Amino acid sequence: MPDNNSFVRKDENKRPDFEERKKELVQYDNVKQVKKKSGNATIEWLRAMFLSGRTLKDILLDVAENQIIPQIKDNFRNSLVSIIDLGIYKDHRSSSSSTAPSGSFITNYVQFSNGSSGSTQKKLEAAKEDEKKLVENGYSVPAFKTKREAEDFLHSIHAYLDKQQVLSVLDLAWMQRRTIDYTWDKYGWDREELLKIKDVTHINNSETPWIVNLPKAHILE
Image (cartoon, rainbow, N blue to C red; front, top):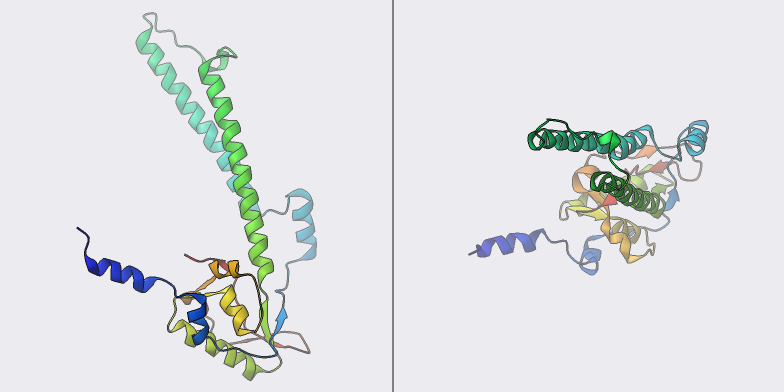
C-alpha cells in the first residue's frame, strides 16, 4: 500500500496555477524587446540551400537513424536466418538474402519496416522543427534603457525562482505586461538555468542597450 507521504510530496512539486503565480510576479512598464542576433548570413544561406536549414549534427543523426542502424539490423536478421538454415537443411546450404524471391516474407518485411520507420521519422522531424520555430518566435529578450532597470528585472526573476522551480514564457510575458496565448505556459526555463545569469548584458542599441540575456526556452518537465 502506498505511503500517504508520497502523495504529499507529489502535490508539493506540482506547479501552482498561473493565477496563483501572478501574485508572486512583479510587473514592469516600458520593457522593450530585442531579437537575439542571428548567425553568419552566408553560413545560414548555405545551410538553407544545401542542408535544408539543418545543422551537421541533425544530418548525421538522420543518416544514423535511417540508414546505418537499419542496415545493421538487416544484416543481423539475415545472419540469423542463415544460421537457422544451416541447422535445418541437411546439405547445410543456406538461402542467400541477396537472392530471396521478390515476394518473400523477409524482403517484404524489411521494405515495409524501412518505409514505415522513414515516414514516422519524417513526421517526428517535422514536428520538432515546428516546435523549434514556435519556441524561437514566441519570446524576445527583455531590453531596457538603463542598467538599473535591467538589473531590477533580473533580480525579480531570481526572487521568483526562490519560490518556484521554473519560469514559463507566460510568466515572463506577464512581468512585461504582455498578453500571449496560455499554451506558452508549458515552455520556459528551469531555475538553475536562470540563476546562472549573474548580471545583465550591454548591447549595441541606442534605445535599449541593456538586456537580460535569456537562453532559449524549452518544454518544461
